Structures are given as structure tokens and as C-alpha cells.
Image (tube, rainbow, N blue to C red; front, side):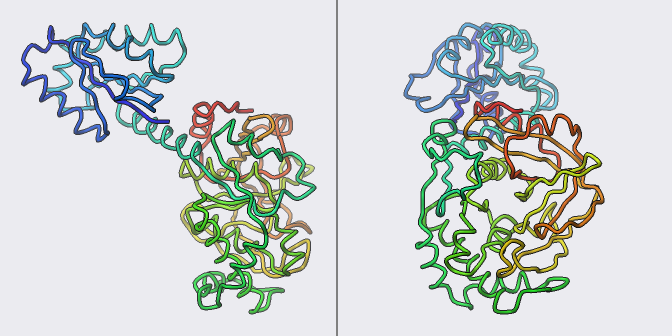
Length: 420
């Protein structure tokens, strides 16, 4: 998704070419965007100027430009209409200059007509404009995203689509299959010295229960190999069939998933869960907090205990206290039990490749019983438990901390994904 920006002037209202040029320069300078087309008296740019752009940012700077705006808008699927004249967007002098030249009625006139097609967003100030530009950038990142599928989805992960082309068709996301052998070769080639920073990172555990020093080193080597695999393929992240890998190699990638999600720009979903990986790609695109993929375990009091062995240590900008355990199901290697705490705003998300929908719901972390389950556990009271159970669309959910619901919903709208 690319944006083409156009400033509209009429010489009827801006007869002085020098004043018109100075106004255009002032607007362009603060926008900080390229390219910007300055359109005067209907002198519309040739289609080559906006080739590949599907969004038009319209900035009316006077009256008598409405037909020009409508004519150019027909070539774009989305319109952002910026009321640049609003006080505070530019200097008082420039805002007043646009106001007295009838920019205000032009904005509302165009908005009323463009709304008929349902593809226009009215933007009042730079704060809202920056948000929309950020969302458009996030949409572009998702649409150009690449996720490695290391192995194949585990047999019990039944909610994902195994038709990888579906993700490209619906979102523009490429799913690239990668063999376990390739990751194993990288793991075997990774030295203890190369993995030392990751080993030291996990050495700060509050307690180490089952893992030995050798377990931690081997898991750190695996984490390093996972990062290298992503970088070698120019990918954004991965979904990894971890149980298959543990069975073959005797090393679990839990610390690797934790490291990727907590300390790198990349991400990883375990059990080969592509839908969780796609959800993480969207969260990374939004620059949301570090994702935690977990199993929801229902409780008698309408809370949900989210549990998994791959939690990131760093959330909300801080590295949390943690205890090192082995992997819950297999007893192999090392996995973190992260002590997140209560009172944290949590978003629960899951994209469905089968339905092209996004489950999105909020909640608050609350005290809960530590269960005989996966190592990290976080008990959440959903904002609406009935709605949560009605719309859930898979076992694993991706938890993001903070309040990102509005941005996530807006991104889904841009991507053509229905929010449930």
C-alpha cells in the first residue's frame, strides 16, 4: 500500500504564484513525505506519477478545487482527506490563509461526496494523520511479509490452513517452507562463543530448577541458529514445528522463541502455528508490545489461564523476573517461567487463515492458581467472557500487552480482515 500526496490550489484564490509556492513549500516541509504533487487549476499529474499507489492523501488549500479532487480520487481505492487549515496544523498565518480561501467548505464538500463510496477518512490534525500513516506503513509491511515454516504444522494444530498460498492471496504474506535439516545444520555450526550473549541473557534467572548449564548453552545455540535462519532467508519471522525438532535433536527451541519475541525485531510461533505467526507479523508491523503465544485454559470463575513455555522475558519495556524450567511436555532442555504479575492490560488476538478473520479481545491480568501446565502462566479476566468464548477461533492465542485494540482493528480494516 503506497500513498500519493496531492495539494490542491486554485489561482482564483491564490493569484500570487509566489505566495502559492511558499504555501505549498510550507505544507510539504511539515508533511515530510515524498512525492508531493502540487495541483493548480486542475493540472492533474499523469498516471505514471502515482503508479503503484492505492491511497491518495488529499490536502485542499483553497476553494474551487472540488472537481479536481474528485477526478484524481477516482484512481485510488482509499482517500485520506486532511483538513490542513485547522488551527495548530501549520502556522496561524498559513491556516488563516487557507481558511479565508475557502479550504474549509471544500473539505466538507468533498468529504460528503467521497463518503458515498465509503472509501474516505477525514483527518483533522497531524496526530491523526501520523496514526493513519503509521497504519498504512504497517499494512504495507504485512503485505510484503515473509514467514518461514520450519517443518510443518504439528498434527494437532488443526485450525490453521495448510494451503500456504491462501495467506499470500488474502494478505500478501509469503509462507516459505524450510526443512528441519537446514536449521539443524545451522545449530550444529553455531559455537558456544557465538551463542554467549544469549546464554548470558538467560543466566539471570531468579532460580534454575531442572536445566543444567549444558542445557542452557544448547538452547542458546538453537536460539542463535533460529535468528540466523530468519536472516539468511530475508524473512520477518517463523513458525517452527518444535515437537518434531525436539524428537530429532533433543534440544527444545523454547528459549529461542522467547529470545526472538523479546529481544529481536523478528518473531516466532511454536508448534508450526502459522496463524499465530501471521498474528505476530501484524503485531510487529504495529510496533505493539512483544507477543506471547499461549494456550487458553478455562477457569471456573470466568477467567482464563494462558500458559506456554515460550514467553518473552521483556514486556512493556522491562525484562521481567523469571525461573528456568525444562520443557513441560517433554522434560527436555530449558524453558522460561516468566513472572508477569497482575493489573496488566492484555490484548488477545488470533488471525484465522481459513476464515480471513481476526479474533480480538481485551482483558486484565489477575491473580490465579499456578497449574500443572506449561511453564509461563498468566491469568486474564476478559472484558466480556461470553463474547470471548463465542468468537475464539483456535487454541493458541497471541497476547500483546498494552491497549492496541483500536490500531489492530484499523489495520485489519486496511487488510480486508474481518474482526470478530
